[in-house]
Image (cartoon, rainbow, N blue to C red; front, side):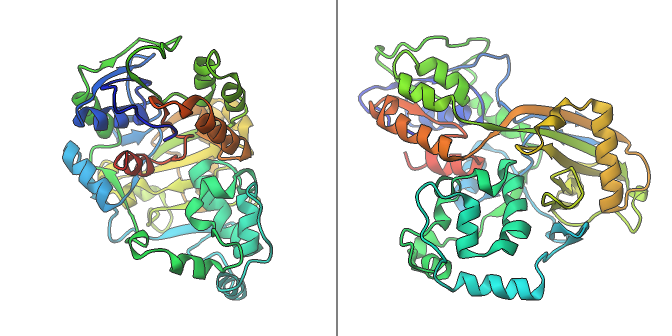
Length: 419
């Protein structure tokens, strides 16, 4: 979150009823604020949406959440039950030489990476350093290619070269550039080294989170109510949760410098494909585990595949397998121009090669997101800084979106609990 509430003002106007708008509206309503949420469309939730099909639920964006005790308590309070990953399906894979591997590094590469973890970095990184430069300094090139790159693609749908290390993964960047990564992590206070978050999913899909928040805010949300001009002279806090291009237009009359910086923020495009096969369609049985990520250069166009019904068995009807693949990203924006038939054929062809599927899928759901995920680049870092110094420097003006420091639902919830 960028900016701060004006505690003298008990009214709050929130622009946008995406997941960030719903979360902040719910939290502030609990604290006694008079909340009003203005949404330009006829539905809440933004990218989050679960579609029911005969074969099982189809998620249109996020499928799961990293859950800490604080996040678990938040969901319990909302009455949204969470499912843990099946004990039989916790394996994660990365492709190397066109095959899925639990450890993609060779023994020598793993040893070299371990040595780097315990060693001082090879160079001192400037504030503008990319995540790729950070990885080369602290872990080495093999770890960048086969561990970091696919992981980053799975979160941001872009490459480590595009991300600013400090804002994309701030907890991994040592404040003292002379210490090893191991020493930095060990130096953190014990309360900062919490138990590892668990991958979980709402039992009835991500839509149940949207529905629960919407029900709590049914008298506060105004649908089909776009805000075209901010009335900043009013006696209320303004919280803006819209994408960067829309935010730029809203604040331009008040802060042209911040608006200009926001117009430089890039988004990664994505195509999400939910695909259902029959159990017997896989040579050697359906895939087991959480999923697989695929580095660029491995001969596949898909970025990865989530094994939905393996991780969460309720995600498919009995006798069927639910998978989700992603294509596109910042390095393959042309994927959004493919027809549905071309996308379906591409995904089926590559899943046959990767997972051993032998027959055409029973059902395919395709959704395109031209602006799916903000790229946490130096341009985004600059936009955050000028917003903090300019438009949001005045108490009562806040920006809370997936580009304002936290891209994940978990991060947003934990941020709200601290305001």
